[in-house]
Each structure stands twice: as structure tokens, then as C-alpha cells.
Amino acid sequence: SGGTLEVNKDEANIVSMIFDFYMAGASLGKVVDMLHSKQISSPTGKLKWTRATVDHLLSNGKYVAVVGLEKFLDVQFEKAARCNIGYDKDGAPRKDTRYVSPAVVQI
Image (cartoon, rainbow, N blue to C red):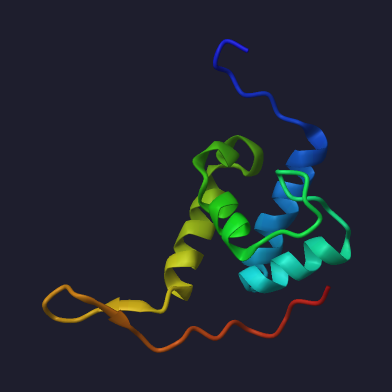
């Protein structure tokens, strides 16, 4: 307590695995499938993860302490590269060409 975060080793290993799998080219859906196949419960204790949960985890700065700043920033750049929302010349968001990840990840 006292406002400090403590690292749970098992949870840290899962978080690190999620970051690594995503950086290896896995989509959010593939990460969800991998977690389900390994029967890893979500942070709320549910058996099924959602893409939104994985996306939030990958964006949450508190995991810098677990994965390190470099890997965290690499994931942020990768997420931006995969985003299919572009901006027109007036700065308005519009759907862009869809990102296609390389088919290199095996579960």
C-alpha cells in the first residue's frame, strides 16, 4: 500500500508474453486466442480475454516496470503502424488501407 505498485511474478510473465507475442506480429485477436489456449485467466479472473482488454494492457504505462521502456515504446509504435485510421489533408480521421500483419506467429 502507500501508492506503490508491487510486481506479481506470474502476472509479470503473462504481461511480458503478451508484449512479445504482439511484437512478433500477432493481432489482438491472436493474442486473445493464445491466452485462451493456454487457459490464462483475464485480469478480472474470467476465462475469456477480450481484444479491448489486451489493447488496454498494451497501452497501459504501468507495465513499463514489467517490460521495460524500450519494449513498451516499441509496442506503442507498432500499434500506431497497425492502426487503420488515417487523416485527410484537413486533419479529419478516415479509414485508411488496412494493416496486414506478417503470418509468422504460431500458437
